[in-house]
Length: 352
Image (cartoon, rainbow, N blue to C red; front, side, top):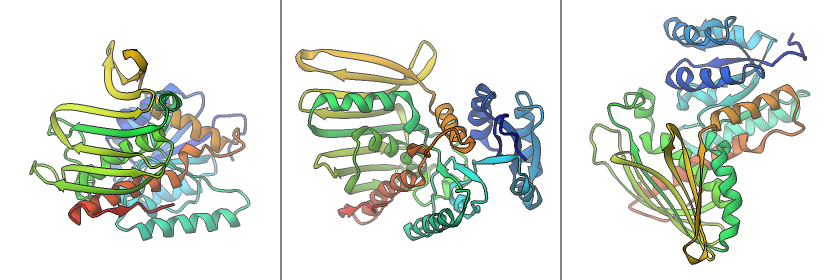
């Protein structure tokens, strides 16, 4: 059994790039809050590769693989939570026998499957004396830049327009370029990458996207279709906006901009003093402006929130980790892709 005075034990399902380059280093930074007990992968070779990286920080981490290894993790009562860091299309199939944090929202073929998974979880939660936690890890909702800029949006008055411009850098030098599951995803990199940008959009504006009208194209044949999308969208507060995404550009840019009656707020990805993060700028009356740089820390902050939830130190689950939020992010992208396939037809966004 887990010792209530010791950090909660967790396992990671998955041993890919994100686990090695993000999850293990971020967990190492907060090792006083968590004990990494095991890493699982489908193959022994993959699991051992990730465990080798992790043992520099967590000497006791065990290597697990295949069906037997997965069952070991499920049966281990010292493991309170599991981070599921595997291909997005397969995540919903994992049974909620423990408290889980999913690193990717459920990228599955039909909205009906999302609804079925959500219904099953609600029924399980209602019948369980110890309510399981199903969390979706969206680090953009935990980035200090978004948290702070969301407050500043209120300063610019009534919204008049919202812009989200993405010029990505998904080329052969990107470690995710050859990722087979991302390439096989219906919607490709537009869905895989775009869901994070939509999460940031929804957080900043503080309301839901009601409807969309989009056009898509496939220009770079080294990428799965579509690789470009331009979508008008209507927010529930009546404001309209535009979402433009180019998967691979020679001039990478990631920018959110909210234009209000009294000013404008803008959030742009950038680098300062060698640190990657966001430049948050508020433009006020008379040409005044102020800019603050926020380094990346969203992955660390979302993990802290999850560990707080599973250890019982929080009275209520962190709402930014809600699986419903993940479903809403995906629903916006799904509506845009459907509109693009239907020559720009206005598509209402599925409500959850």
